[in-house]
Amino acid sequence: MRAPNAEVPMAEPIPVFFNEVQLEFRPLYEWAFGERIAHPESTARAEAILAAVERDPGFSVREPGPLPDSALRALHDHHLITLYEAATGWGEGECHPTTFPGLSRFNADPTNLHHAGAWCFDSGTPLSARTLEAARWSAACAKDAARAVMAGAPLAYALSRPPGHHAMKAMFGGYCYINNAALAARTLRRRGPVAVVDIDFHHGNGTQDLFWRDGKVFTASIHGDPAEFYPYFQGLESEQGAARGVGTNLNVALPRGTDGATWLGALDRVVLPRVRAFGPASLVVCAGLDGYKKDPVGGWALETADFAAAGERLGRLGLPTVVVQEGGYYTPHLGRNLTALLHGVRAGQAATR
Image 1 (cartoon, rainbow, N blue to C red):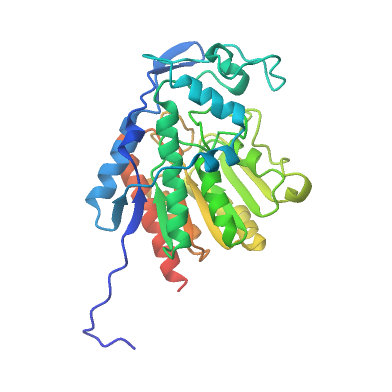
Image 2: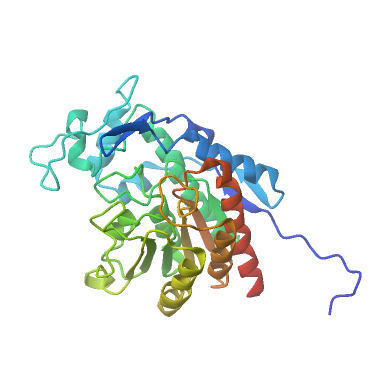
């Protein structure tokens, strides 16, 4: 038993990975149902989170090392990477894909940005001369967060911006270019099976795609019903994986207006039991915060306290955990929602020791 006056040791700060080059990509606008709007995926998102973690002594901000080409090309199709490389010569402004031939791609040329729609599934995800560099550092954050966990940190956070969970093996969209969470999961997979739990308001279709046939990575996404919300064509509960991955993909779709009690109840009853049954050695959390009640892109009614409660539940899994930033667009409260989630994960982990 600890002596009554003994000093309680302070926990090590949670490592946060971020590189300022991620702020050099500044998408200007997107088209939303015929209306041109300022692009929601602005630098203000990362800046708000960075300010919050820098104020909090429970976090330690670090720069990631550069992402090797081999890691990038092992994750995504070489034509997709070639397209990103071609965009580095675009000059000023940005390229918005406008023609979408679909998966057949006809005679698409990834060195011609007029053919970008062959590898894109929406019109809201532009390419510019700064896209690839920012996305590479965003992915590097996720990879180094996973390395930190493999080196013994119980929890690490990747301030990944631009986000990544919509990026598929051979297609980009949903403001995502490189799948940061998938890169973290592949890094952690060297130590054993991995579970990815995506709490973003939008379905993690890219992560699902990348691990669809992979029996060593369990993917779970709890999201707004795709009958009404992006990405519309994926995220159905019938989508369960294929080949060796059958049964290792879980989708939980919830309706507009879902509150914290319903959301947390779905985590408790459906998602977390399946994660435990899979028996992972580590966990990746796709930290989308766009289910917040004030978020302009979401459609739920979650409170800050709900993110803390979800974090604690995830932490109680007792797994080494990488948290990767995804969505969340109400910047005034974005920092507090993120820190609530991370402190919740840490509290849950502490309760299992």
